[in-house]
Image (cartoon, rainbow, N blue to C red; front, top):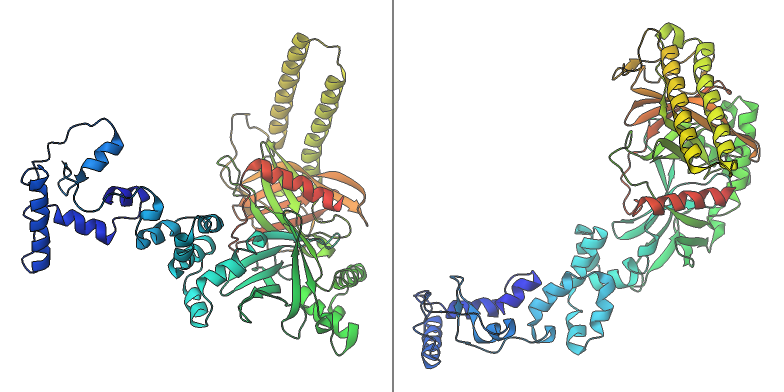
Length: 557
């Protein structure tokens, strides 16, 4: 029994420990007469069985023909030796013969998804699975619930009901999601929050305060307060929770529906709804926004997004897995996008490139599109501050690299189309192209920083200033940077017409901030990391994450 308990990893049961104590010599208790009498009886049984005087050194165990036979004829004493005599009842031959307290410990270690199969074994297992300890531990282990369980149980809801009727059925909607709101997208985080499952919509801070924390707005919640059944409530609007519904159909997708959309209306009609929405979304009134084009964009977004009435479809998204070779930790960032305000992007690394994908978008470049593509194999060493202020100097450096990239892409296209070329000639051509690329990079490095050799590495930090004429929503930006790289940004006309990638400069300030200079637009975007804890969010592997990125682009293309 002791061996069985140890194999289960939960320690020895009370009966098992008592039997071990009875089998020891000289370990009796002077204060408990019953235990002394039991030890004497055990000693007599040993004598009858020819097991010696029961001393620690009298076992004399030898290797038997099988492990099963060894456990049938001996037991382990406290000294670590084996006693031949088999005292007490026979060892259990199956899990069903174990004592209930030990089965509770074993079942508590199983994942909740396996417990329904355990209940099918027999009546005894079904009865044991009614033990609250099992379900309380599963709620804590799988969903992080602790003190909230005490409040729930005090309210008359058991941990088993909580797990079976709320946490387990809705476990598939926990994590990060992107709502299907046309080009605007969004970021929803579904979490176990106290005694509820809540869907929080994450909103960027008010433009242009990119380094402020994110704002959250509850869209729905699920609880078990009424009739011990899971109830879904819509949280949209200003009249409090009201009836809603959640539908899960396809994998990694679910939909929400509000059953009382009249709760979203305001007494003052659409004008009052717009003013309230504007203050929440932008932190200002329409009169305070002087730019006419910006007013049109804001009004367009309100009309488009309010028509859904919180009846939305969500698709699962993942955070990128962290790799040791990453330039900085990947994750979510808030960035400035001119008249469109602040938007949320996801930074990820793919070999020698860094990519920023939009989670929220606008009518020009919608959510899901690759907004930045940075070539980490093409660093740019900045000039002194005087030359940095000259936009022509910066443009010459970046456009020189851009022309080099285009030449290489054209050459690669020619090599691919030349199917008649032999393998040996192809290898020779690749080597020649690599040599030309290396020479061009050395030349570019010399041009970027006069008087330096190719072996000279850039300093750990270097002064940074925006060129004159480059517009920045944030006048307060870091004045030192770590590294700079060539990259391209995606621009397009209204309705995502005529999209094209335009060259620019990626500037790494620190692990939580980076920027991008859009040369064609003469604009600067500053990005700051989203630091909110996000559970159930990371992709299981890089392949799964890249497949998700491809799906995101197809949603809005």
